[in-house]
Length: 160
Image (cartoon, rainbow, N blue to C red; front, top):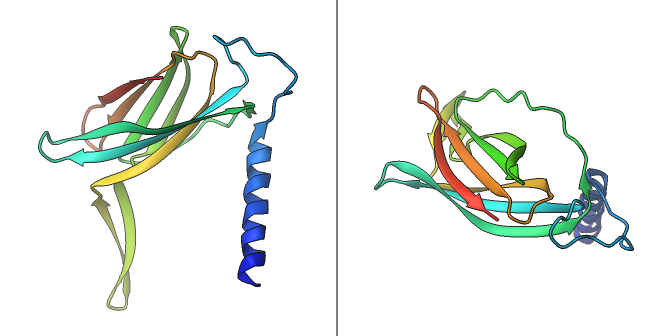
């Protein structure tokens, strides 16, 4: 398949995935400026390993808004030794939460001679993103870290 046709196919697939994940709102409906129930927020975070303070740090590196409604996703049954938990607070109460594999802890497989071997490593930095339905322009995201054999700690709190 020619490169140009492959690129068109990728664009078509990505467009289809985006359209099925979101329900686009009616553009003729007026939205209240303080409460935008039909807005999806995409947040890009960068997490780094701070070797001086011996802890991980997270910063918000990008934010994007889009009109629409997210479909409800089934609850995650994530089982991992190292995780991040993100809680979304809007209008004073928790409205959503996410659990993801910790971006700094990776499991890699490699060929050691003729034998396939797996190894866990910690990288110095990585990026991850979340998306959620925003109804409060002053939403707060609290990010917690749970590492294997350690208690859960709060990494940061981001005010939008």
